[in-house]
Every structure is written in structure tokens, then in C-alpha cells.
Image 1 (spheres, rainbow, N blue to C red):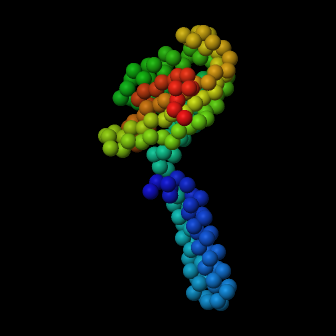
Image 2: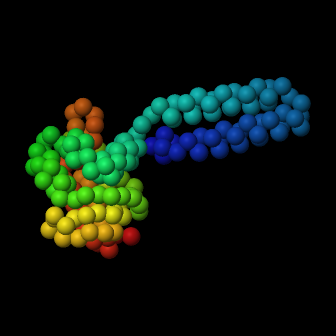
Image 3: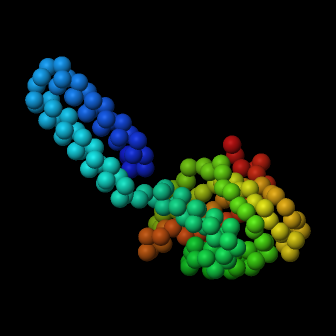
Length: 181
């Protein structure tokens, strides 16, 4: 039932429909009880919206991490990006440290995000993020020997660490047509 905590629109619409419905019946019948029910419906809606805003689901955390990592990439902040690597996978952190300095990122935009796939049946929980990026990059110091605009598909594999934070265990980037539509 995470859809309820990820999308406040459902709470809002249901609350408004109840308030308007009971309010309309109260106006038509003049019954005070219906006005009280409309008021209680409004109060419950407000409480649920406040509670929803305080709950951060795994899916929301993963999307927030992707946004933060995008800022690190845009700013060519290798140290900041390495903080998202899992301590249980030092080879991934070393790979980030080795690969990222080869690129001078001038701009990056993330689009075509797929809904994060989360597997809570494993311990620790794992997740997979797939998306595409449009970058303006100078990669003349890399294996690609390229400078200019490029499109890449990216897959991030993450696991939930003991401190409750999601961290990258592996990643890949590839030609976008390999990303399923």
C-alpha cells in the first residue's frame, strides 16, 4: 500500500470528495450531523496529508539518491559520488574513483526513469534503477575519445546498508537502445 504514501493526490481527492459530498447533503437537508462529518473528513484529510509528507518510502529514497548523484555528476564531484558507493563493495568505489575523472561533465539531464525495482525478500534489500541521461561531456581522456553531447542508458544496483541508507553496489552505462522501453 505504498501508493498511498507516495502519492498524496489520492488522499486529497478522496478527502475533498467526502467534504464536498457531506457538505452538499448538509446544505440540502440542513442536518448538523452531516456538517460535523464533513468537518471531521476535512480534519482527517489534513492529518493524513501531514503524515504522508513525513513518510519517506524506499522508492522515494531511491529517487532522491538519484537526484543527489546527478548533482554530483553535473559538478564533477567524484568524492561526493563515491559516498554513494557501498562499503561492502570497495571495488565499485574504486571503479567510480578511477572512471569519473576521465570525464569532464558540462551538463547532465536524467529522463526516462523506470520505477525502481525493489527486492525486500533478500537481506539486505536490493534495488535496481534504470534511466537514461543526456550529457554534454569531454571524454577525450577515456576509452571513448569523445567530446560533445551523448545519450547513455544507466543501470544502478543498490543495497540497503545496516544504517538504513541505499548505496550503489554496481552500475553500468550503455547505448540507450539497450534500455527496454
